[in-house]
Amino acid sequence: MSDAADLTKPYPNLFAGDVDWTCGAGWYPLLRRLFDQLEPMAAEARVSFPDRPLHVVQVKQKLGGLRVYVLGGAAEPVREKLLALIREAEEEAERTCELCGQPGSMRELRGYYTPRCDAHAWRGAQAKTSKRHLRSIDAGAG
Image (cartoon, rainbow, N blue to C red; front, side, top):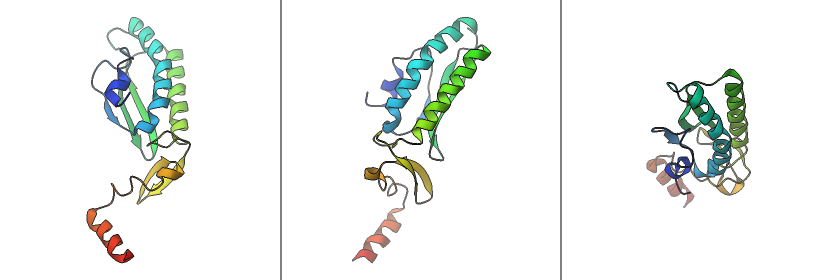
């Protein structure tokens, strides 16, 4: 699966509409595992709360961590399990490179926090740095 739209297709109960999606593809495998567990819960909740179906509204990277936001109705035991599963995925993401999915650790890249493996520890910092700043670095290196 190459992008977030492809990632959501196997989960019709979880993704009923548009989702605000801003995280790297390195987290897609752990999100697939999470959604595999949440999909039957969403299907069950849809029967109990047809007017407020349980669904994902946002998946993003915030302050270096994965955040998965859901809305809708669910019985309390189901909601507790759902939130515990989301917390587990968020904790796993903190140790997973957001770019490639390999084991990583939290890195500070020019004021931004993101989990990265050693191979990607610098990648992405350039995207968050102005071109002018990069030119000044290049000029100073010569």
